[in-house]
Image (cartoon, rainbow, N blue to C red; front, side, top):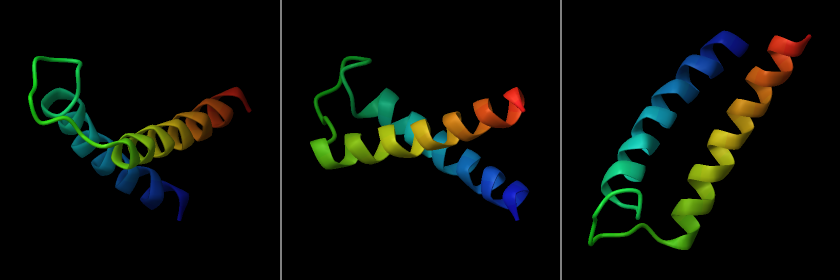
Length: 58
């Protein structure tokens, strides 16, 4: 179950990376994502990163 969740999260994070590259101030862009979308991206990435970090530390 966890393995499937991690693989699914990987797909989400890859798509979120596209948002970072194409819709943020990380690169010259005119179409910037909104605050809600930015919070979603940060939340998902943070949760997955925390899980992986805790897993590796155990």
